[in-house]
Length: 253
Ligand code: PGA
Image (cartoon, rainbow, N blue to C red):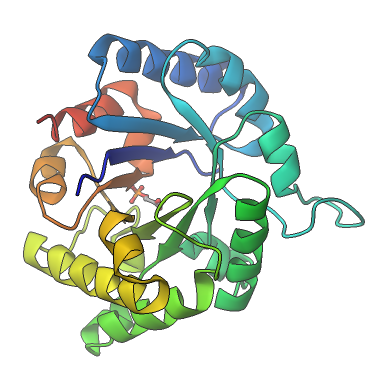
């Protein structure tokens, strides 16, 4: 059973045209040079940069993704973008249910599942984010919280081919703090068990589970070596070409 490592950059609300294009070009160039067969690369810029990033990564194996979408294909939803629109301009992936969207926009597991179902139907792959808050961890609820989030936000049409789970402890995002390697492996293994319960063992064995939350070159090697960690969803460190690539080098086989 081989799960190809996925190194995904979540740019969040960062990047104006000039620096966004430079970042995408820089990543694409390094991905081309690295010529990895054991690793996939994805960048998820904000909506405004998707088209120009697409041009900037042309000819490299870097893939393009968005950070959110609506569940409808089109219609009266001011300010929203549909999965079909993302697919139309060349996105392969969409991140859904990031903790910042759960917090800033009150997104529920139910809504995330609805978006994920539609995105998959539109031909996109989804990265569904889950993870506990610091309080929940302190109260020993980490596995319970992740279980509820998976059961509620992963749709019925998810398979190992169209879905990636990103485990991102909320308290580790952008803080420089991370769980220990043992703690990360414990949660990832538990997530795989829940996926098995929901989607069957074959899907669970093949589904990629990324770690996210202050992943950087200095801790990537330890985290990416864990048996149930199949890549990273990288925020801050994805905004620097050298750091993003250094993280992927940490899992060179
Ligand atoms: P971070 O963000 O790497 O800056 O902690 C990760 C994420 O939120 O996806």
